Every structure is written in C-alpha cells, then in structure tokens.
Length: 258
Image 1 (cartoon, helix red, strand yellow):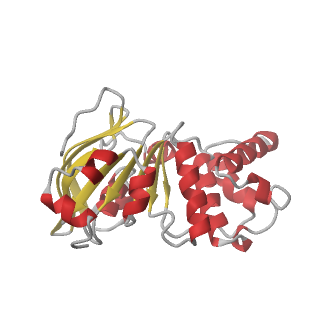
Image 2: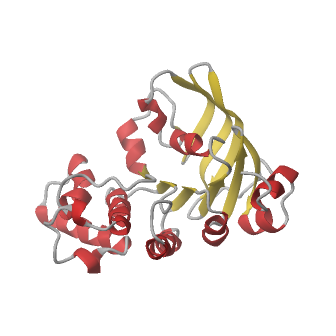
C-alpha cells in the first residue's frame, strides 16, 4: 500500500525520491508519509535500500562522495534539501542512533553534554539537568548516576547503546532515526532498548531499520517493506504482517527469501 494517506499529522513526507551512488541508482521513486509520534519500521533484505533511505532523512549521505538525489523530503513542512537548509539545525531536529554504539572517548557526562555544548549551552547547572534528564529518558540514569565522570568506554554494549540514545535526546530532537539499534546486543539489552522505544514514541517520531521481523511486529505502528531500492508496501504493522497486499511482502515476512 505505497503512499498510504495519513491525516495531516505527518512528521516526514517523501515525494518521488530517487537516490544515486555515482552512476548506480539505490532508491527508486520513493513516496511515503511518516506519522508523528509513532514508530515506523523499515524492513527488507540486506542491500534493499532501507539504511540508505534512513540516512536521506537527516542528510547523513551528504558525507559520502559522488551521491545525488532528486525528489523532495519535507520535515515539518520544510524541504530539507533546499539550499537554505541549515544542516546543523536539521540534525538537531532529526537525531540518529547507529547500529554499532559509538560513544566518544570521554566521560559519560561529557558524552551526553556534547551536543548541548555545541549548540551553545554553557551553564554547568543547565548541562547537569540536561544530562540527568536524557539519561533518565534512556533508562540509564540509575545505572550510571554515581559514575558520570567515568569513561563511557567502560560501559557494557547495551549501556553504550542507551548512552548513545541519551546523547541523541540531549539536543531535544523531534525525530529519532535508529539503524538496527539492537542488532549487536544480547537479548536482555535488546529488550531494554525495545522497551525504551515504546516509551520514547510518546514524545518522539521514531524510524527504525531492522532485519528482525519479530522486532518490527512488536515495536512499530507502521512498517515499510523495501526491496531492491523500491518501496513495495507500506501499511499499519498489524495489517502488513497479517494481511500483506503484495506477494513479495508475504514471501519476505514468511521467510521464503531474505
């Protein structure tokens, strides 16, 4: 159900998006409207374009040489590829959490305070408040509140990933992009991250790339199935998993390929 209509409550609207790495086209005519304060999962086999698509939403692909796109991506009504778009402002609004946790080689406190400092927050008391609130939102505060000056690299893998989520939350984004945030974690840490996603969607629009069908079914409100750079089907998650409209979607979610 490509291009399914939602109400006006849209966080992101993508129209006729084509994306290229050099001469190779990676995304073909993507049209999708992503609703606010819900979780949207992007699924599909490796190399299908879902992570490339995710990175177009905050212009992370800009750091790669020889890429180009045409079409339009609107975030809260603003064309993010307009020449007047401030990239720093965009990435403040649209935060990102990567597949592999990537804490800075700094203290736990300085990891979370990094973004607010970059954006001009100087007050130590204000920074302390932001750090505490962000760590609470990421479910990490009780585990680290007595060792904020310790290196973030001493945290477990699951804790590091939640720290990276706290770091993203510290600049008060509206949208969180998550590229397989639990794929490198043990089952217990995965559960914590999934529970956290369920909590965060009350206040944030979340878009998550996942290879895990069960995770998509559990955690998302809407699901988009990508295949070979094309958006094959997009619907409410319950509909897509129980009554897919496209045979390709059905074959993928039932494990016939992928």
